[in-house]
Length: 218
Image (cartoon, rainbow, N blue to C red):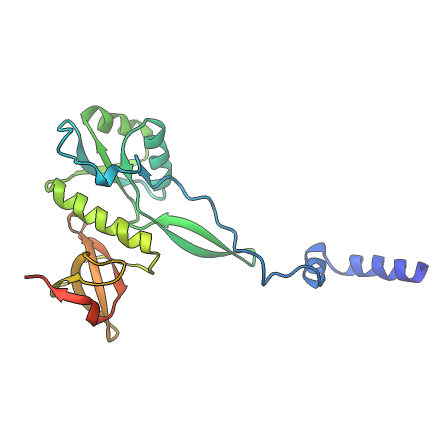
């Protein structure tokens, strides 16, 4: 018994606890669920994009460009002040200390979309997290674009942010869970991708799609 105890002590002195954990047969890292960091509130209220924005004429959409890495903090401030906003977030896997973890990052870096009146816009400036606020000329178009982006995020399909709008055919998806979405066809590395744009930002997201799912817009 003493020899076994001495061997155990020797092993513990020779190997750190973290390494011993990896050697423990009862612990299986293959079966562990990937930790998921809690998602921030991406939209407030939840039905914001489905509301008729023309009912409340005192409110309008603004594209807020925040200071670096301040999108989530700014959104939290808006939430605490009960100011409507939309911050498109997508899941991203990260390798932290050898473990895969899933977090949620802004789809359009730096941008939060605020829907408020002049008083609420002014209140948002007190957060000291804003670089600039861009007015939105075509309000209905922005809402339509954000609705489509929201639908794409909800599908869980891998999205690629496109920094500029490319010329191409305007099409509509005619089948599948994304039926009805409209966008522009682009080709990259020999594959067909659908670009859905937020036109006022001159940015968008794209996803790979089969040609048979598409129909031209007349």
